[in-house]
Amino acid sequence: MWNAMNDLEMVSVKIVSAREILDCAMNRLDEKQYDKVENLISAAHEYLEYYLTEFNEKFKIAWKETVGNQNE
Image (cartoon, rainbow, N blue to C red; front, side):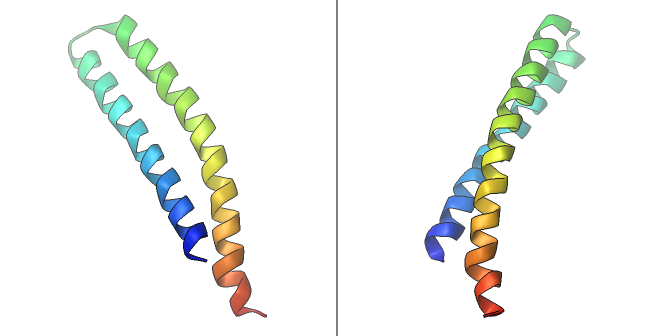
């Protein structure tokens, strides 16, 4: 159970990093550096796509190992 929860937390931290990419994009937008904004948003999109898939998988495992076992 603890391994599943730790795996889920590690993926959650990766997703939070996407927020940093978006914050950087907002700063570039304020500076009217539109080409950098486009690149950063594309990067955040790809980054999130990959890690949200991983998060969903880890969440299902953690759910099954914690909540699922309570129903047995």
